[in-house]
Image (cartoon, rainbow, N blue to C red):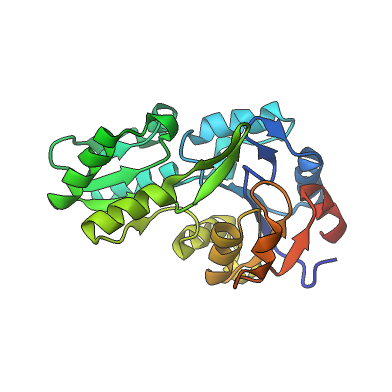
Length: 254
């Protein structure tokens, strides 16, 4: 058993509960266990290609009971950020994620912010140059998380982080990060759960964005050996508070 027991649990999605289109065995049972124990939890993902409703449907399709309100994702955080400031933005996000930006002023001429998500194969040289020009003209860069890559059915694919890094190198402008591993993103989730960060356990497969980010925000980090996990991760400077073979083993420690 994990000692002390957490008051709330945060769970990454891709690599923890599923790999792209395939569920990871034991995920549905682990979530049901948390519900039966009355242990509050949230799904905390850097996925930027979909909105919360679509992610909830995906989880339910895998037999994992979920509602949109259970999910924290960067498009949701970015939309709130923009609306709170009444700011305009150029949105470099997938069509399926645009639903989260309802009410945001989109500006393709002189935006206040450039919102950078995962466009996958839709990234083109022309789109990167468009983002570059907005930034050079005074817009601020917002990265929807800084994940380096993720595991798709056909193998590893670049995520938002490398694209943000390219624009940072070109403009010498550090991005505002609204997603993992930004500490404020984790604290936002802890606040939503009504607990202190130190009382939360983050379950993830990425040693940097999930575990390192959570620990920097004051949470404990549990690393699973699924998804993008590699044995070399254990030699990283980040040291998980706990390591499990998969989400299925969560029942043994909570």
